[in-house]
Image (cartoon, rainbow, N blue to C red; front, side, top):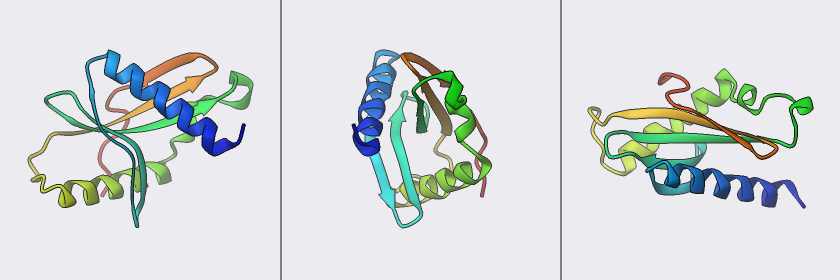
Length: 117
């Protein structure tokens, strides 16, 4: 299976997991010139920008470690574009979450990092 197809499968798995936790998936693979965000969700209070990372097994490293400070800055830039494009004001509560999938285990880190401007 190619990496893109595998990534899409794992993002769909993460989306289904988040929906079971009560979140509403607003966008999948939101793209702009600044980059991409895997999932944009809402829990009724927060607009949640979620990065999904997958590793086949722990020997290949913790998937959560793959969300580097550089990746965090990219996610924040894309989130800012999303907010402007959708007319969300600066008062919109925003959160950045990370879903790590290692084998079949899903780890959800809420509020994984602060906004980086």
